[in-house]
Image (cartoon, rainbow, N blue to C red; front, side, top):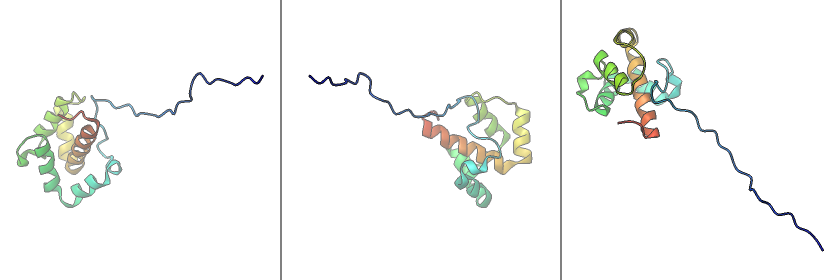
Length: 115
């Protein structure tokens, strides 16, 4: 009489799920390669990108590049920082600052944590 092996546990496919922190920027200030489309939009048509960010946050288009907008966004998601760091980001690298916010908005939307 032949005995057959019985499989009790099926092999599982494991996937690596990246850890996402709700309380940090999803990309760095100068991580332009994280989303080249946003970067190019910021470089070639900055007013349009700034207006998109403001609209995403239900604010006036004229506010998209302000320190207040960055501070509002950072405090909404409990991202560490200060008004001083927001001022420095917008004063010394305005395009990078707005691009970072747009990348963050896109990533949070994909993850379902943008409100």
